[in-house]
Amino acid sequence: MLPAFSSLPWIIVFNTGVSLVLFILLRKQSAQPSLADDQPVLITEAEEFLLLDSLPDFLCLKDKDGHWLKASKQYLAFFDLAGVDYAGKTDLELVNAVRHKEHELKLSTIQDKSAWHVGLPVKETKPIGYASNNLIEITRTPIFNAAREKSRLLISGHALDNSYKDQSEQITYMLKVCHLNIVFLDAQFKISQVNNSFSLMTGYHLEELIEKPLSSLLEGDFELARRDFFKVDNQGCYTGEFVCRHKNGQYFPVKVEITEIAKQGGQDFIYFATLQDITRQKQSEKRIMQIAHYDELTGLANRAMFFDRLGVLLSESKRRHLHAVVFCINLDRFKSVNDSLGHDAGNQVLKEAASRLRSVMGNRDVVARLNGDEFAVLVLNEKSYEQTTYSASLIAGEVLQRLSDKFYVNKREVFIGASVGISVFPEDGETTEILLKHADVAMYEAKQQGRNNYQFFKKDFAIAEQDRLLMEFNLRKAIEKNELQLYYQPQYYAVGGKNFWCRSINSLGARHNRGA
Image: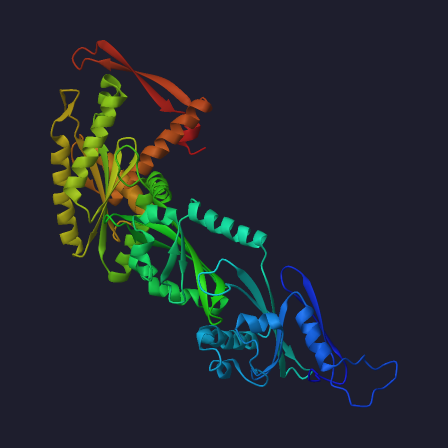
């Protein structure tokens, strides 16, 4: 008879994946039968074995320490244990009886421990024997008593029909021809299988990759990826970007996704990974970044990028007590070239001017096109204010000299020149907006001084600029309010007093002059 689990019968229902199996375990009764209605029906030990062997699925019952208690003929046949006295023995103790099944029995021990460790039914699918196309599905169900102590391990299983094998073959074929680049990894992240797409992407065949670590194809800290993967909260998934090395030596970016899919040998997990070539994605991202931060015509930084870099360099200058110099550069006579020779000619001039500015400044300094024919340059300087202004003068002089040289547009010589305004951090301002504004004011002063020269910002420039803005504002308001008055001033000869000319003078009205 089967050993008793408690004073009441146990009924265990489990799902094998194909059908439901109901196995009734009856407690060992005393020799005296009871006729009480609440007592279970008694069966003999022979009937018990008959019940086990007549089920379509194989069954095996072990105690908490792995000793065999009962097993069906089908399960005994799987290990070639027919006729062997197995009762009370463990898998390892049965190895002596069937040496050719040593691997399967040792593997069974490991899988039993895995089921106890998980505390839930553990299912696996495996072939019957080596190089066999016949598959069986085995489920190990740990049973605990009311105190959650280990009691019995119930092993059940059944052979999979041809439809399942057909499905398995279809899935295998699907993975083989799938356009995704698929690779299977063992517990050490070594390659165990790849599909055709993976071979095409990397240039390697399976024979060249088998048992090689996936990291051998990837540039970057893949060990860090492995550590991230085994974090408790990663839920068995990992996604990251690496650079993959093709067999021909070329490199390309890939997105790596790894998923934990199954147990291998009842102890170690195996992994399913895909590698996606993201070259086009990276090119698109680079293109978007280029459009967002760089001028499309000249390739220089645009206004947004310039302000961003200026803010970063000003923060660094404050921290390290450095000077920063902002140059505002406007091309002279560019409008005449653009209007007379056309926009294509104007674009050629802008691109050539940008190239000359880059050659003067080098790669360490920031050169930007702010708008139209206006450029800006940002230079970080570790020297004193006097040395900074002297260095800025040399740079401005070289810029003027390079932009004053002749340009060739459609085989024609063109001369433009430039006006340059300069502001220095922190003397002329401590914010990006003020520094650029003051450089712009100095640039307009350079234009007022006859163009093709440079000017450092002075406070007088700002006052004069404010006066010009105030005059313009007052004139506009005077026209709206009809406050302009016309006066005539006669001109006389000093000798004889004869009138020879009369000059007209516009003046703001008396109310405005009084501050009304």
